[in-house]
Image (tube, rainbow, N blue to C red; front, side, top):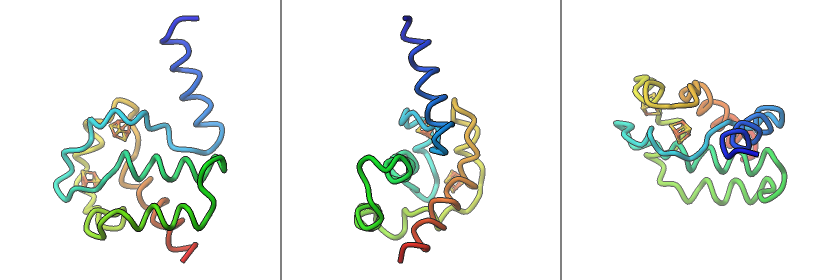
Length: 105
Ligand code: SF4
Ligand code: SF4
């Protein structure tokens, strides 16, 4: 199977699991307020998949991110959306992560 096909299957698996289809490519890291987008989405997915992060593990890992760079500091400028090859609605997905974090506190 070609690597492109494998890649597409992985993305599809993410979507089906309700996880965020972020590949960690980091094209979005020019966020003006320094939101750690790929890291935040990776944590969310690890919690969503239930494989690595249980609730307390997600909370503990998330709190390692400096407060100024967490999901709730997004100012919705939209820059990241223009960079993301997956065309993710990053500001709204960050709201989901923030809601998860606050629901576990
Ligand atoms: S929309 Fe939010 S996460 Fe995206 S670049 Fe702007 S401030 Fe950063
Ligand atoms: S650009 Fe998109 S796919 Fe790449 S790391 Fe950022 S959110 Fe993830």
